[in-house]
Length: 501
Length: 45
Image (cartoon, rainbow over all chains, first blue to last red):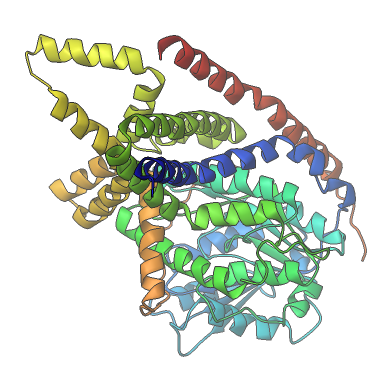
């Protein structure tokens, strides 16, 4: 056997593995290219000014702080009041939720209905089904809006969604959830930016593809025919009931649409630990959905677009993102010991792709929704974290950075030998993986006050919010594969959503 | 299915279409940013 050839082959395999890390980046860029052509795939030509009798279903567990204002805002929608019924399913709340809802039922007789489950805590899907059974009992309901208790609708949002249901081919419509906590903090602003990318941009791209990944839990409108077609109830077998409903709708041959001009505002987690708890549930749900619909992926069908190459690539680029990062950085480190020069080339190629995608996505995200963007632009820029940003600057301005680095070291008279240079190189190679560890550390050290609070924020900015999301997904994989107990834990809401009128 | 033609309907649709068209034009902004970065890369690398 020729050892020289074998060594070259190994090096090329490692380069291929490094470039796996570029796949989610390219897919991300592809989504944003689809956003550009969204104007050519609009559904407005098939819309009509339809205002169906709409049942609004709100699951509520200890929502006394937020439910009253949500109901008041729903009653002020630009929508005929006699075409609205709000069903609040109180999941055996232990706070004042029943009293608050009953008071609202008295304020708005015939519009607000309080339903109470005597035994609660089984999960959101079970709570929704309790209300759904009641709603489906008669034929009053023509459309069903499922929302969360803390979500605040802009006045024209519901009618912006119902107009699409005039097309019988449309089964469901989802609105644009925006982060509405005011004054908010570093975490809510990161989420605010994330929602521009994950909703305003990604869901426009999904409109273009013709397959939507998930109806937002806080704003999903279904036609009656669609609810009947998916079995008249919400799936209770996973932690991602919204996604399952979305898939079942499309598999039944109905379209799901994202309406970016139906804006709703939600209160999102204000700490790393709260975000972690919420997103672990979402990520585990996505693992369950990925396996449950395993016969759908990459199998194109006439009836729906879930099996298209585009949709599969987008789904798996998010689902497998932490794995691709681990593989890419492990391959870079292995290449470092196999062929140093090639490792530098591969590293450079990977990160220059990263820079181009980062600049385009960040710049476009901020202009896609500038009213939000101008509030969260700092978090948008800091999304990859300080170290990744430093690497990007180093990749683009290599000569300049090396020159500055040498002069700085010479000025302060610190020797930085070859060993130091190689330590820095290895660190940057491993950073794609290590950033997830740093993000996990940020969660571990977080406290409500004192040094832990500030240390966690510093660590988050160093590691990046993107790495935090990857660390959560990775943890969710592990929990799912060892069949850890799955509990439905509600995110605490305090009612600090402020909505522009 | 009976439709209720409310006054703002046409304006809502018109504004939404205009916004989406404008979004395509706004893609020139990030495109310009990427161009600047690539030029800087070619110059300083």
